[in-house]
Length: 403
Image 1: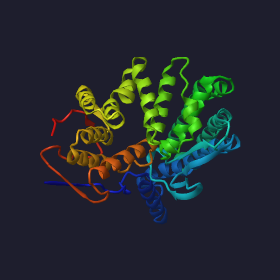
Image 2: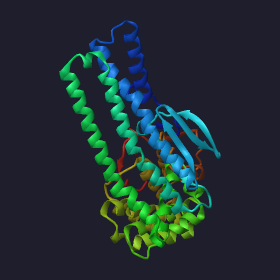
Image 3: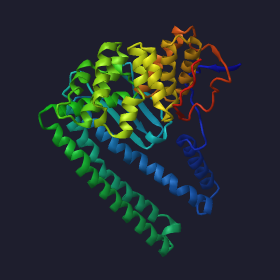
Image 4: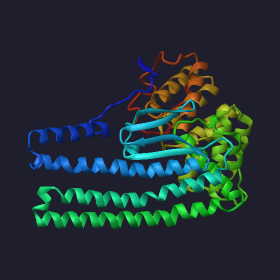
C-alpha cells in the first residue's frame, strides 16, 4: 500500500532563487572589495550584475509605484506591491510587509483592484496612465547605468570597452523606447479609449480586469463582488470576450454555492463553445463537462461518458484529479474519490496564491471530507491503481477503468 498525505504549502529555497542569487552576488562583491580584488576577473564578473540589480530594482519599482499611485487616485487599492526582495500585501484589509520569493515579481510589480463601489472604468483609465509612465524611468536607468560603468577604471582606461559599453547602452535605450511606444500604442491608449466610451463592451472588460486582479492575489471567486460578475455577463456582440466573461460568472457562482446559476452559465458556454478558439474551448468547456455532470447535475452516466470523451490531454494535475474525484464520488466509489482528492490537494502545494486554484482546493477538501478523509491526516491508496508521481508536473486526462 502506498501512502499519500495532503501536505500544507511550504516555502522552498533553490540556489537560483533571486534572494539566494542576490546574497551570492553582493556577498561575493563585498569580499572582493575587502580584499582589493575589484579589478580582478571575479570582481568584474560580480560588479555588472550587482550594478544592474542596484539600479534596475528601484527604477522598475518606480513604474510599479506609478501604477499603484495612479490606481489609488482612480479609486483603487493596492493588493500587492513588490520591489526586489521587499513585498507589501493586503491581508484582512491591511497592508503588511513580507518577503518576495518569486522570480516573476522580483524586480518590481504592483497589483491593484478597485475599491468596492468604485467606477471600474475610471479606475482602469487612471491605472493604465500610470503604467506607461515607466518608459521614461527605464531610459533614465540605462543612462545612469552607462554613467556608472563609464566611471569604472577597467572600462574608462580601455577605449574598446568604453565604446562597447556605449553601444550596448544605446541599443538598450532604443529597445526600451521601441517597446514602450509599442505598448503605448497597442495596449494603454486603446484601453484608456475603450474605458472612456459607454456601452456593455467597456463595462464587461472593466469587470474582467477587476476580477482578474483579485484572482492574481489569491482571492477566491466567492470573494468577488456580485455586481462585477453580473456586469461581466454581457454577450450581445457574441464575441470571444463575452464568452470568456461567462467563465468568470461560472466560477463566481460555483464557488459561491449557487449551483443552479453555475449550471446556466456553463450551459451557455457549452452551447456556444464553437465560437471559442480550440485551446480556450478545451480549457473552459471540454475539460469541465464531466465535472459539471457529476458535481452540479449529479448524473453519473453522463459524467463517465464525458470523462471517456476527454481522451489524453495535458491537464494540471490538481484539475484532472478534481474532475476524477467528482466523478468517482457520484459513482459511489468513495475510496477512489478520496485518493484522487488527496492527490489533487497535494498538487496545489505552492500554487495557493491563485484564486481559481483556491476554489479547486475547496472542492477537493469537500470531497475528501465527504468520503471519510481528514485534511492533514494520512490517506492510503493502492500503488497499482494510480501511482503518485511528480506532483509538480501536468498529467494526461486518460480515463482509468471503473473500480
